Length: 403
Image (cartoon, rainbow, N blue to C red; front, side, top):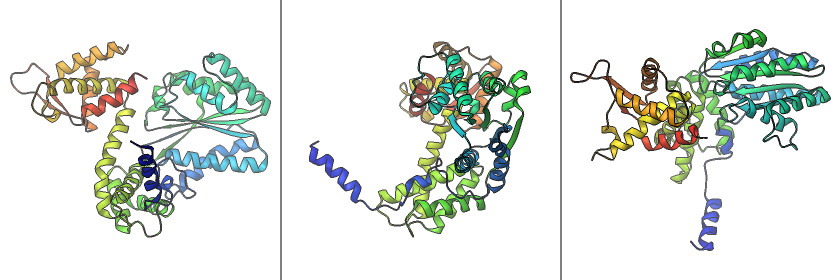
């Protein structure tokens, strides 16, 4: 392709009309000034962290709730307001946000904290003990009141050791303090902590309920004002998006993704207004995005099991004239493929009982179709069929499991 052709593509992109005013305002990661239907949670979290302003260590906070209930956005909003207030008053408050899906080991968590507090230093290759001591020395020197957010904390390997180390660090600090905010979709998370860690936490727990249709509509109306040009989205499109999200357990993240994709569809069609038809067209794209995100968030053993099913399906698909929808597998051959893959990845395969449990969970998530086998099959044999693209599963999980 000639250089002129490439520049023409860029020029065409700049001159293209769009329904968006600020596309980022429709991102689930955007932190708006207004958080409708979460005023109570904003107030509760603000009161919990406020003691840090007077030099006291606030309680550690564990925030629970399903995906899309506003846990992360409320936390970021409150901590942003806390930093702004502290800066005006000259109080040395710092916050560090850590996504534990990315920084999923104690070493990575400490490197992230060290890099945030000391941006000029390179901590790669240094021991965790050294990084820990450097963090404590900076907190002492600056008399820092540090709040560390561990988002998706359930994805953290060695969670008890990491939480214990950060919490007990306060015993070594004559000046400054460390407080933790853990965010998780797993309501039983604290049950996975060892007794020693539980006993030192002094935690405050918050549970975020799902949004109802009215709450979702308010959120979408507010974001639409920021994200779309005036008059570029119909009230019907917002109402339909809210209705679909309400069926998805009140998931605001799903609602925002759907509205964003509907705007993309409108732009692709050179439409000046986002309509209900654009929402309908965007729904399929978003549901695929949600499924892929869910797959990435599965526990590791369930990911290995799903990857084994996907690989086995692809192998069988190549042996039939039909598509992957027509490939059926028995639970026995799936377990063999799973156990083999687990060992290849250096993991210990789970027992047959847990294997059956994981199969049932993947069925509940809508990723597998599982039925009891009839005559001609042994004992508790089940017939398993994959309900999502095996190629996409392999692409996502090979990167995740081999990272």
